[in-house]
Length: 326
Ligand SMILES: Nc1ncnc2c1ncn2[C@@H]1O[C@H](COP(=O)(O)OP(=O)(O)OP(=O)(O)O)[C@@H](O)[C@H]1O
Ligand SMILES: [Mg+2]
Image 1 (cartoon, rainbow, N blue to C red):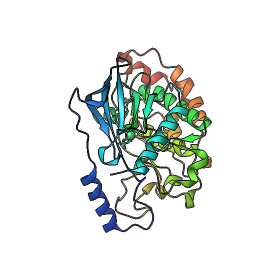
Image 2: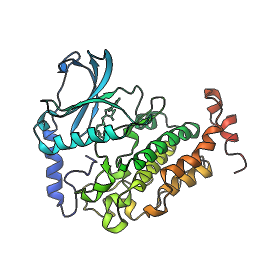
Image 3: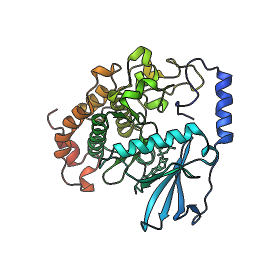
Image 4: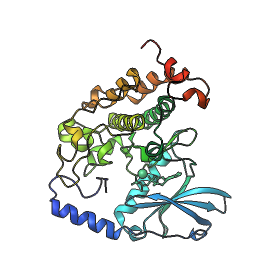
């Protein structure tokens, strides 16, 4: 369990935390819908796409729309849990407020029925995390990705929200790439009410880990998540060592509170490395805004020729020409 949004905040004991992790594993129930089973009337399971602590996401056939959809529903043991019901209602609200070409869209939500769920468009493509694990991505693929994600994050900020969980697992590499999972997206006016660190440990900005030390969570926190995501996408590894899940909220648990990011390898063009490092500056006020990231990346991306795979070979023409003279 890497998410923090639940039990793991200041003052918990190691034994208590381990007991929670064990209890979490034991109680995390699955619907186990077989292919063709009705998730709800008119929506039939095709296959399980994934899931976290609270939800399962199924590829499903929708009879009425005559189309594939993604049904994201509360796990069976949580359907009557008021906190979980609140959370799915919050996600539905965020999805309604945040409609953008680089963000997943929601067709409808059933929040009051026996199986509270969201019907999302089905995004056909691998998760960015899967691509990183299997093949890695090159700078010519990174630039359009950075542009889409920074545009989405600027839009989220302009609508007075924060996503708070930007990471490769929450990016589907459809065309264009899309940011998913608004399960912890929060209105800016409510960030101070977040009860415990919210997000995924390795991707959380210092102010998400410890607002008392680093100031308020805000749009700059998502820019940090973008920085970690781009860093991992281009290098295959994370900028900070893994924290100790059993440690209290400190540098041991969140190395990003104390350490500087590891330098990127020399295979990453210097301007790209500088931009990623700028997103990973500890003081949120010193990071570029998402719009500034987009403005920096746009001319680079515009210089990319039409995608012709042969040109993207390591050592190929494109690799040499985009950052010529820098
Ligand atoms: N609209 C979609 N189209 C295609 N796949 C999706 C879609 N939404 C979710 N998925 C798949 O389901 C997985 C879980 O969805 P999501 O991240 O929204 O839920 P979660 O329970 O909050 O997950 P986690 O806690 O692991 O972040 C995603 O990683 C992705 O593989
Ligand atoms: Mg997710």
